[in-house]
Length: 526
Image 1 (cartoon, rainbow, N blue to C red):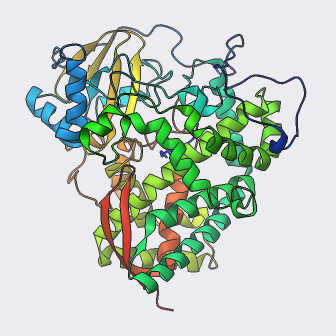
Image 2: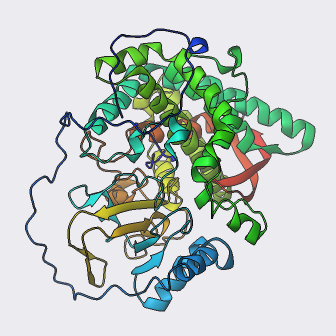
Image 3: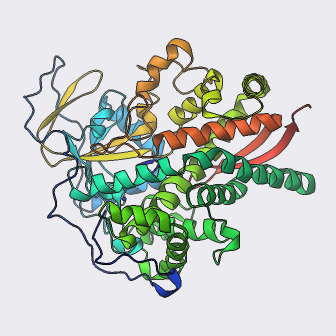
């Protein structure tokens, strides 16, 4: 989603044509890691916006010097990293600097810093007015900024720069995003039935664990259900009937750690963790065999998609690496974060909201012949609003980056700031989407926030690397799977409240999303 699509987001992918089409099995086609490949001789199939210089920017707000500094070399980045991960924690790190500088725009260092990222210096944007500049590809470049101030080794993705790391101005961006659109369109009729099947298995598993143990781990069950659902819906493949078996979620989690370790906190002792995953990259060779298993699975499962990739001018190998990333990192990763967070917020909201959701959902489904349909879900305003509220209050991809293409003036609510060409902009989305000058009761989960006139606020829901009111295109960086993520989040709520009247949970901490344990499930009365 995510793009920052889990987010996860939630989908993304590049190119080199092959002379002959290949339909060979993965058992005879081994993945080879090599240097980065990129085609730069072709013109983009869709021109990126903003190729002509825009007029000078004007502002009616007072221009203020961006407060803050980066400290001494090595010392400043190290101190900010320790404060961010350990001494203060992520949210308090930002809150303390807002109070210190009296501004939601300031300078700071973002991890991982030395010795992984050579330049950790960023301009931080923490309000709902300044944050959207990160979506404007006429003003910012998104090349190699998907994970922030560092880029994981391309050895983790078969030697290719995946779509998530490409700027719209690069020739392969449009081809690969078009390929993602084709995947979503060609398999759309399989999404609802396969979701129902996969999450019915999850619900059955939760009920068995509750009966045996008195509680059930939602996260582990969700990981398996999400992976099964994506494999079935997008590729028509049953993972358990392949050599991958039930290992998919575990393999993906290890691979994601090698990609995101430098910006995660695993709960290890402070200095041990900082001197390992935050100071040095984990060697890609350690995960090569696991990645090969995933690659073989996707190559064997996606021949019809790889045929289309070749028609678009993308090699089968590059297309497969992008399908793997889009499925495992963007989509599975997004569901791994978003779904437990959804359960957390709905669970905490209590039985009254549960009853309202159950009544609305069951009434609409009954009026549609007992079937769950996309049209029917559009007739569920409370359910839709609750999903948007979960995406607002805890977006699955919290961090966004962009490099200024030219000198800019960026406005917060109170002041304007001059940014120089080449400066790296960073936005922490949970602060922007909980901006009290935009949202009332911004820190609270308000399930009906986006009902009626509240729909006007959807332009400030930004989880998909763009406003909820806009659409992903070949020329922007909004998540290709934006609508898919909203759909599956709605399906989770619908299928859950068709089956249950209410539920209770316990919530713990996790390096990705919430650690949700279900302690009670009240089955729907027949």
